[in-house]
Amino acid sequence: MDEINDRSTHAGALVVFGATGDLAHKMIFPALHAMASRGVLTVPVLGVAASGWSLDQLREHARDGIEQAGKTDDRAALDRLLSLLRYVDGDYHDPETFLKLKQALGETRHPAYYLAIPPALFGTVIKGLGETGLAGQARLIVEKPFGRDLASARELNRIALSAFPENAIFRIDHYLGKEAIMNILYFRFANAFLEPIWNRNSIASVQITLSEDFGVKGRGAFYESAGCLRDVIQNHLFQIVALLAMEPPAYQGYGAVHNEKAKVFQAMRPLHPNDMVRGQYRGYLDEPCVAHDSDIETFCALRLFIDSWRWAGVPWYLRAGKCLSTTAAEILVELKPPPQRLFDDSAPEAGRANYLRFRLSPNSAVALAARVKRAGKEFVGDQRELYLSEEQAGAEMPYERLLSDAMAGNGALFTREDAVEAAWRVVDPVLEMHPKVQPYEPGTWGPAAADELIRAHGSWHNPSLEAPNTPADTRNGKASSH
Image (cartoon, rainbow, N blue to C red; front, side, top):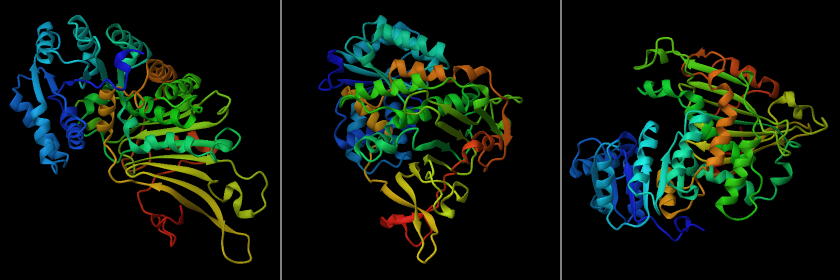
């Protein structure tokens, strides 16, 4: 095993390229503060940027980000983090910048380089690290997106692998650091009762919804270059699909998990334009830096098939968008109805069949829906939900968990080269050849065509932020109607 992949080999320093940027301000410095508070960040943090800043300015940038995140309760941890900060100012295209970084690192062993920079600069920085001899026995942490399509993903992987071995490359998808996402993997394989029904014989369809009730928030230029499919579906939602659809890992280790997730992406049927609906909320064209005739989607719904023994014929419906009715993320695994209609009110037309529901955000829960008979002589009942778990206090923030793992050499929550390329292979056919966007009103659930996409298998499950409103409240650990 390569020494750098040994979990006992902790990074001797964290180098943040783009330390003066928005991502570092909003996400990275609050995460580093939390790591310092837990006592897991004890090595220098070197910021690198071309901003003409001083170390004092970087410290103020970090302090402000932590304060805005409301993470100032541990002042001692804040002081420790600020004392660990270093700064190297310079242009990424200038070899002198990397020589200054090399001097700043000194005898540091196993540095971890985090690229919190625009994707267009990934290759420049990786080549600079390699040419200056800074890549040896180091780790590379790459922020998504990993390319814009299959060809660019392959090129980015080629450049990264020219300087770093695959087991030293940590491709961040912050969604994988969420506690609720990790619980999908645990729930599936820690409970034996699921396995007999977790296949095409018992599952009718799977839905995944990631909705936001706000627009692009002034990030029109970014969205014009990405769109909803590239921004969240090809990465975030596909990762969720892989965790739900993967086979049991052959052994206890993150390599086994990566192997099975990659097989899911490889079994996904490439998308056809008829498998997708694209939408754009009214008002998007008025956003700054958005073309007056833009065809970029702010909403996307997909019908996906996984051509494997377990999932053959089961449709997966994925949906994400901005300016929708609420901000939430949920999964609905709908089971097939009973084979014989013994009770009139248990027929499919009486409502949704039994299901498992995973609430991912804004809070975390797992619920099982089943029909329960009402009191009386009649054989009629209601579908009720049993909550199996709920939000737990003290969970790590996604970036805190991911940065801690990358610095420790634990690759469990990161994505691998073959999985990245396989996922792009699925969406590549519709990146250019796709239906035109359809307008939808803000505050709705997207264009009506999305309802037609799923109609053959029922209707979309629309997440609701309202607490259960029946006498048997799930928040007391009891069942409640959905």
